[in-house]
View 1 (tube, rainbow, N blue to C red):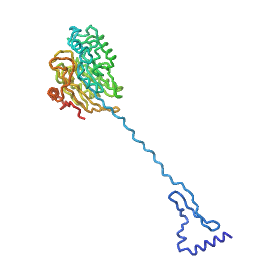
View 2: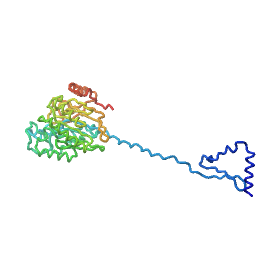
View 3: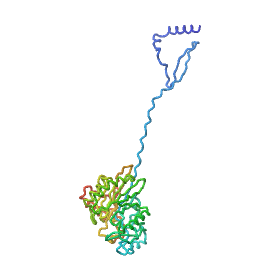
View 4: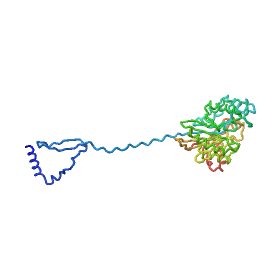
Length: 395
């Protein structure tokens, strides 16, 4: 009975509905979907009463995208400030009275203070990350000569304190006075440097010093006997070997002729070959005179750093010198030359005598400018010589 009533009611509704009513009800039409994902379903109960049932439908999920990897931050670079000076010769000549020399007399005058020699540059050297010098002499009490040098330099091993008080962390001992007192003097010197924590380099020993997480290595050679070509071949072995443990590689040469203000052709060829072999910096000494600097393939070649604290002569005819300073930026295996400057100075605090206390010239003074002018003049025949020598940082 109920079913008949429902059919009757449907027929009546269709009869009174507007034309197109049925057409508007597409049999395959999807039920309306609410924005919230709720489906509305219309029903008619057995009593003929309309009701609305709500059912939920899970919203379709968009396909998940692979999470993009954040770019890994590059390791921060480390900037190093390196200072380099020339000859440091302490003590006196064996052929004189070793207890009364120009050095021991000045030392006594300075109240036996081991800080006396570097007193006017210590503030500068304490601010860098690494200070390098050429230690030309021996730290020994031995009196047995090891060669026939006209001058044979020695000082008691306790005078290694001159270097530590001066904030010197690395030296080369590859020079023509290394063996002034033979193997005994050489061993005593290395023992004193080891005890003081000073890294040293000679032809069979790589100096290594780590600062700010960066390891700086230094190789050292002397070229006497015309062995430039032999050294060039050795560099192809030594520099890659040093790279295994060192981030920065420096080569310090003892080369050239005494009192020369410019490098000779053999020095020039070797210096550039050293950079080509992978060195980050080339330093030089022996001439006791300032020499020009080259910038070759982005690396500096400092041909001669002259004297620094030099007790070999009470009054050298030329007491001008300079401190070379270099900023390097090290990141991973990359070493970038950032900036350089020189600090013109005299090897003594006085102009009338040598007291072994290197002292900077006043900035902008005639004496400071004379050092710069000399280096520019002597570099005119060098293809890669610097055209200017800044005495202040440019960056």
